[in-house]
Length: 280
Image (cartoon, rainbow, N blue to C red; front, side, top):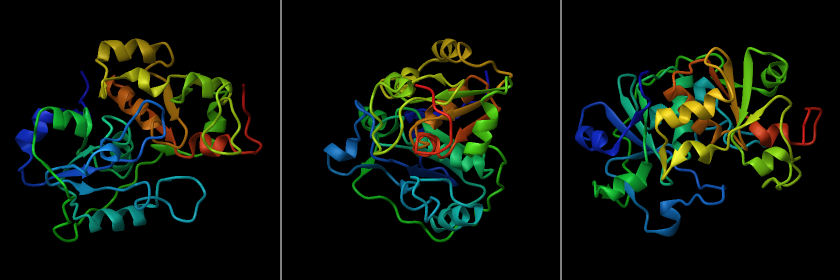
């Protein structure tokens, strides 16, 4: 079995006081039906000692109409150092839905060369279910960190790379949106965005890889993925705006896929009125 990118709540509780362990709340309000943010319906709650990693508004590319795009390495370094994160730190990212927004934070750090980063399986709801310690306020950074990125080429890709992948048998695009949005029979949540999907893309709605806010067991994931892409292919994941594509990327990682890329602009970019081809 490959090295897992997941840790469970028991592991995190046992290591919560470890030197050089940093817990990051990477929550983003869900826009997918059936997914609910704990903190949208309850008093604000965080895992004890967690700091805020806000890639929706802060650690993202400025001056673009596309949501939460990956920032430059320089901006990423500035924001992450301000959180007090060091090169030697082990990071555990979580969200308040379960497993929704945190995989993108994991992939962002991977893309910047930080391999000691893990996703909390089940997130805040799983932590609360086991009555582990929480707080009503996020922790402040202890001071600036020394984090230095080592940008990894290709972990995020742009529309030109996706366009080139459409007719390439060595590459497979997998779309995490719902079957209705993929087919173009359900409306897109963003005004003016076309319905449908990229030519040659295959659909794997991201909720299919989850069960009760956790990633499904490998034997269940394996059938879902091997029906869509071989281990030898490069897998490019896409979704509405680059968040839930990373849930699929995490699932693929757990199965041993390593040639992985996330289409950063996703359908918010591809589906906008443009020359990019759409099948519906």
